[in-house]
Image 1: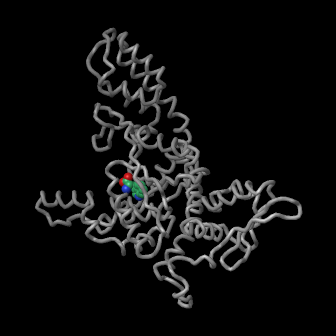
Image 2: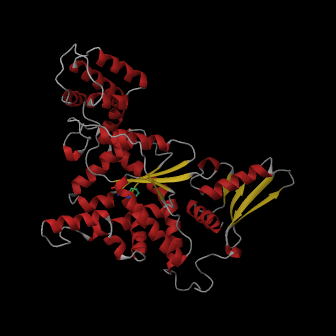
Image 3: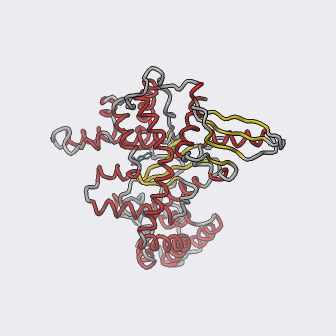
Length: 431
Ligand code: TRP
């Protein structure tokens, strides 16, 4: 089965809090570990430039957010985890898409319209405070998604319109230049947990009621002691319903632990004791991650190395794909014959897999490029099915993503992983 490619961007801004952890980070990390999922996760630092014009802060937030996700269990070996600005192909694709995206489409973006409304209410110029970057935000986001032909994009409700715009741009481009892009779908998690904050309203930076995820234990304890409760005294039974303390506990505890706290509420536990229980429960989950986080923050070079390795993986897809897109739009070496090189590669000029049986009775395959040169040569398989399965996986996933197959298949001299990914992509597109 072809894995589903799931892609999400995280804007590096602000310090992550428990609400971000429970509502976004923890579920996304868990989802990325599921079989059959090919997960792409990146730090949207080009996007952050629209709202942050403080260079030190942008750098700091990028480090903090990267360290947070790694500390929370994101496995950079499994997931393609990278920084948007390490992929120069993304701004290039942004331009390609900008040229097929009607300006009127962007005029209708909610975020932009909200700015117009705000300015109208303040009797300011309509575009006061609107940078061109803000205006074309959806184009950059479309490039993020389409570059990797993501099938699914998990996002909050406020981002759904952006995914629809990405589909629009993909369709226009495909219509003009051939089928290059998969149309992405937004995936909204209906049961995404929202955590109450210190004052009982949704935990959010804008309410100033947050508990930072990696606050040192003493500060964590102090903040938890400040969560609002009613004024019932020790010994009086307490209501779990509407109790922010209880809801936060539930987000971290097992059903059994939660039942125990519910019983303690009924038995009249003192608020101070309940808060101590909450502190201990959160700290139990967070302490090991906090230790990793502190370690990474003290060693930014380690985070940088992880992001560089991620960029390499991402560019193994982005570089050959962009080369094809450049060709498709007509950004071509001048000597190539524009008649024979139309948007769709004709069959004769495609890479191909050839399966055959050798004297030794085993089954083999090789991959040749459009000119018939051998790119890959397999080892011998006991059955044609085994060989066929390996071919199917290479076709579906590309070379880079199939690291576990590399021992079974020899790469011809002078052939790079990017060449292989490009050849396999051509085959996939031709199907
Ligand atoms: N705009 C998203 C947000 O504000 C972040 C983002 C940028 C993104 N590029 C993306 C999300 C691509 C999903 C896919 O949350």
